[in-house]
Length: 95
Image 1 (spheres, rainbow, N blue to C red):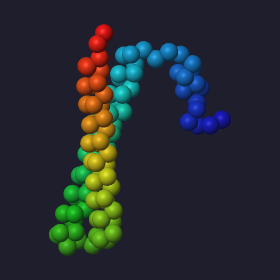
Image 2: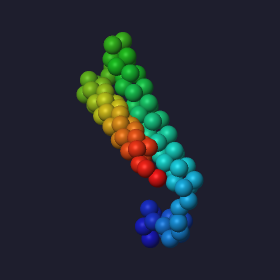
Image 3: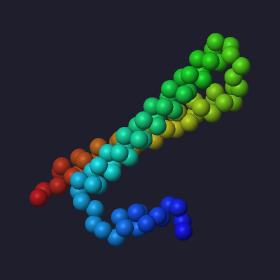
Image 4: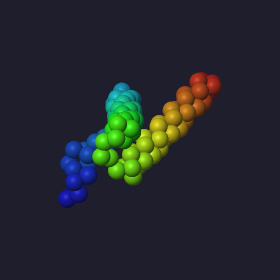
């Protein structure tokens, strides 16, 4: 059996998701993404500070950590922009 598709996931796929459940799922996903972005920024700052203090830190690791933080931030900003754009489009709809 595939570990990703456990019995609980199969049951959830066969039933209708309520708007509240969808909202909570999106809220959880978004919160996790923001926390991940923040952690990557903190890790990058920490590695940079360690290098600036002259600690034994590989320059490649510092640069990779900084690049991961940068990409995560850019992705988060793009997702935010798309969510705002979708919200504005929904608000323009006539009911």
